[in-house]
Length: 139
Image (cartoon, rainbow, N blue to C red; front, side):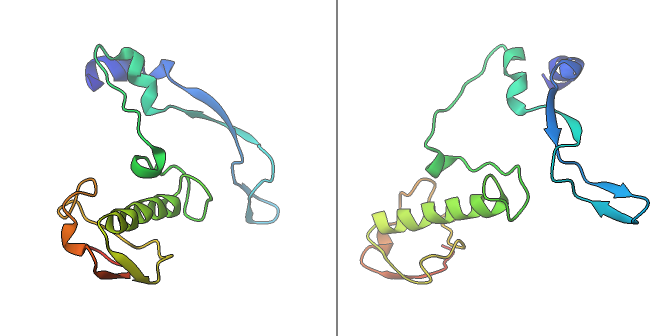
């Protein structure tokens, strides 16, 4: 599919995005980070290939439970590694609380994890009922 359909059509899938693009200033011998858009980037997204598919499915999920895109650098307020980590950490804490565990310690930590071998969707965590779980944790 990728070689036969997507690659031949890549030239038709770009979107213009006006961006703040850093550049090197020869006179000051430094990189300038502009405060306003100064350039154009051509972008394409995974969903651009959907119309090329003969069969496709879309899942409608709750973002706070299932979807954490990472498209911005660390330190950004949205769609960054930091926000993805916080989202999945909150899901892990909720699963344990729903199973009856009491969270203690640094409950605001974004380093809490329930690994996929322990639970896929919050199931199978009955052993934590009425137990204290020290945050951050990895189960």
